[in-house]
Length: 484
Ligand code: NAD
Image 1 (cartoon, rainbow, N blue to C red):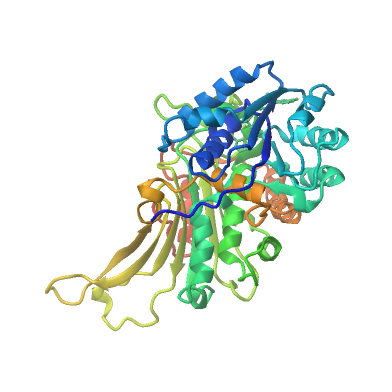
Image 2 (cartoon, rainbow, N blue to C red):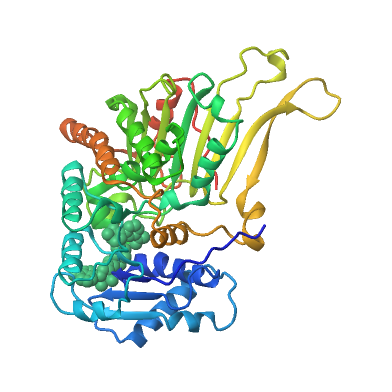
């Protein structure tokens, strides 16, 4: 099935931190793929901004290398890369200095959309926002894109929101959580709200519990200093897993419009109960063969930062009262796998008897790898052996079923950057959502600190700390396996 491409009007995308890791791995390749697909039109500009003294030609070379390395080999016509590079410009400036801004202004064109992407540390957001304003770079179609981490706690998130609000309205601010740009996440909303099948069952009467797992095999990499001050709770749970929980738990919005959707997500966060200390498990991965343990990797021998967290959350409202949400995320686990499992209750009465076997219906929503949705249903085992029941997957793998010409679905950044250009904030976090998420997270972290809790060690490339299994078993439930 070939997806429909609606080109966007020519625009200027300014990437502060245009030489950085995120720009090279995600932003630049995403834009190039949209160009290949015909969505980004000739005449648009990608303007890289960073402190390095680079000529435009050298920056174009950096862009070309990033595309070759990270654009996933998507088929493009010959000569496309060369044509794309003609739209690429570079400005050297220090976000905290005054030089370079007028030159940046000269590159921006008229009234068309101009998006300023802050692919730099949050400490620079205020400097950049202020200088964009002071240097007269704002037009009526100006948008500001900010990356995670959006604050370290409620207080710093409020301060960041206030800093941005000094210079821009909320309708101009796009806070990225790239999980929301994933095709499956949007499909989750399509499945829930576009079919009559699921919504009547989407409540505590029929759903036993929900599991959200975001597992990574990688360790901390070059992000040690940042990660050790954040941990899994701040780095993953407060944003990505909370956002997924919101989309699963929210009421149907009246319309698929930015504030209608975000209002419903906010209500979910506000309905979350505080998490009981015995409903949370923290872990830190141990060394395995040549693979260093967490503390060696971040170079902090006494670190008590968690690289794994699992918890049981309750959404206190009519729909979800009595249905727990189990969330877990960790590094150095057995497989890279992000999946949401909606586990339905058993049939109220088995007419086939205990020996036939009993299986719960499970809706599995896989975010990565192999994006797709699988419904596990119970059927009769084929053959003459009597009435024995088995669990079979009704599988919808989007890459196979829906990818254009069998290609991978678009990367989240492709979708999100185009949404910024189109001015659609639906898949971006609003300031009050982020603050509400921190208001729920802060007491959890404060509790660990007050109790002097140390994370439990867990085997690298395993399934996480044993205590996370107990968290489930106490409730007579089990985690689904972490499978690639
Ligand atoms: P990086 O260190 O690789 O790059 C930082 C970029 O900012 C460089 O281009 C550098 O020249 C530029 N820069 C730094 N100080 C500057 C200044 N004073 N003036 C102008 N430019 C300046 O960092 P990164 O990994 O690309 O991350 C950028 C931001 O995105 C960070 O806030 C990070 O937390 C966030 N983020 C990164 C990733 C990722 O995968 N790398 C993922 C999510 C969020």
